[in-house]
Image (cartoon, rainbow, N blue to C red; front, top):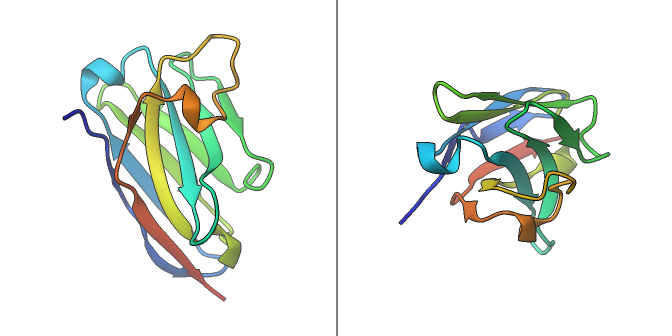
Length: 125
């Protein structure tokens, strides 16, 4: 079973920071776009950010300027640095990988082939 493994979640106060990590098997990391999604209780899963193999990035409007996605291709790892966290950022955060169309935004979960089990992020007010 191919699996991506997320880590770094936790409980922090509003205004704080967290850094999420996701390690993937090499065969679904090299050449793949890596995305982060999140799902809050009672809500649908939503796109957060994506980084392509080229290094190009794209963010949801709700996190633009606060979150930064990056990847270390030598470690098969993608990161999500989250700053100025808000209570509405509380969710389970999922890492995903997908080949994707080069022209696609990769902002839809249907564009991804592999998923992790998630890491919980809770922001207290």
